[in-house]
Length: 118
Image 1 (cartoon, one colour):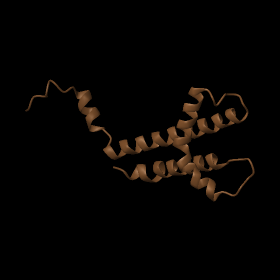
Image 2 (cartoon, helix red, strand yellow; image 1 turned 45 degrees about the horizontal axis):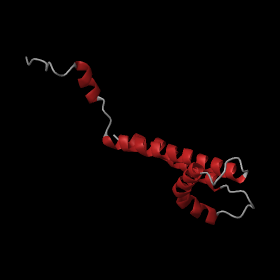
Image 3 (cartoon, one colour; image 1 turned 180 degrees about the vertical axis):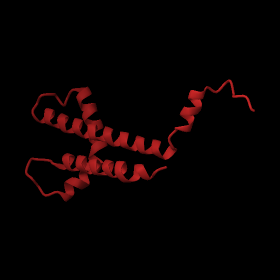
C-alpha cells in the first residue's frame, strides 16, 4: 500500500479535482467584461446628462478626461446603432438598445454556451 503524499493535503487534492476547465474561466471573463461595459454605458449616459444640464462643468480637466475616456470607449459601438435607428428628436436610445443586446449576448452565453463547456 502506497503512503499518502504528506505535502498534499486531502482538501487541496479535492479542490484540484473540482477545478474548472479553462474555457469556463474565459467565459467568466467575457461575462465580467460585458457587465463592466454596461456600467460604462450607464456612466457615459449620466455624464452626458450632467453636462447637458450644466450640473458639471465640461471645462474642468477631470470631467473632460472622464468624458473623453467614456466617449472613446462607448462611441465606436454606439455609432452603428445610432445610424440604424430612426431619428427621435433629441432622445438617444442607442445606449438602451446596446444594453439590451449585451443582455441578449450574456443570456446566450449563460444558457447555451456555458453548459456545453465540459
